[in-house]
Image 1 (cartoon, rainbow, N blue to C red):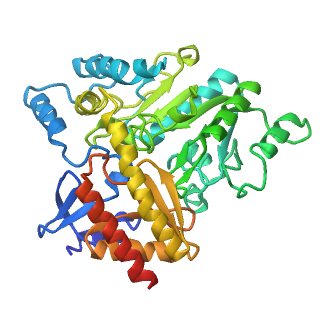
Image 2 (image 1 turned 180 degrees about the vertical axis):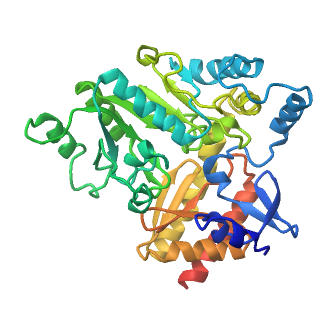
Image 3 (image 1 turned 90 degrees about the horizontal axis):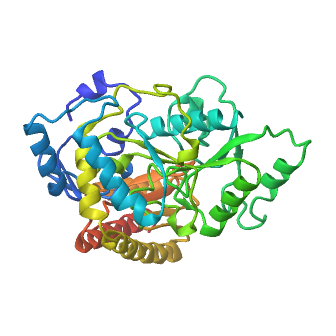
Length: 414
């Protein structure tokens, strides 16, 4: 392996250590290294490639746009590409779900969306404190990090992370404590010392936190608690949105309408940077230019995003297929969990297998890589194997990957 990476690139690199090869090409569910070896990808750009690598339907539109000298960089200027995206997002995503949101383009990444949401809820409410949840992950900039649970990532901040209070996520106490017992008591007790919160921020399924899926009833309870106590609700759907759990938004099953929704990763369709902050119209109290960013108008991403919405969200066929494929993954994980005393987790095509011995998942990931499958780990101690193939994965590719996971778990635990 060319050692320019070791000699010149920062020690902060991580995925290149997990998968020690040099990748060159990609198509569909596969990445190919420079020797032409194919790796089945059950990582999907950490959820940024729900429609696979170099999806030909999206690629065609992108090439046509670039060749006709379509605007590449547009800040927040009005462009033809942005108009087409907004119209398609409204017709294919918002209207069919009865959702009414204004769309903010906060900058190109998920953490940009989260930062804008945190600033906005403080501006709306005049309060500072944010409620986050145990094992949450919301991004690596300081505001997002303040509402993130992982101690290693928080430690990287180098300063105190303040104005955020963690509360127990769904099933944090293994069903021993009624939902929101502690949270509600703290809100209602004038002696609790809890600053009046502006908002709660929540992932309906925690990806980096260990594939922890909340129940629809828990989400509804949280939504009602927010309404009762004048707190806004932010759903971070950066990794679990755009169909990862089945429906376009991961909160649809709960029947709630969050005040603010953060989207990034697969919203661009092609792996191009794009993020949205969706805001209920009554909360859109920004002054012009009060939150901005140089790269918030990534027009090539508008082009691929628009085509992805047209191709995959004009009807519910992708949603149904994701749920069906997810159930197949779930069956195999349940079988492995029963055999090896592990825990099967997740929903849709965000699935995990958690092990009590925190060394196992990393070893399984390595064994899978040796068998030409990319899977990452997640959880506070990297104790969960995280399975997130592209939503466009074929049934044959899915079975092939699941067989490698079976073989890898067996090789580590046999």
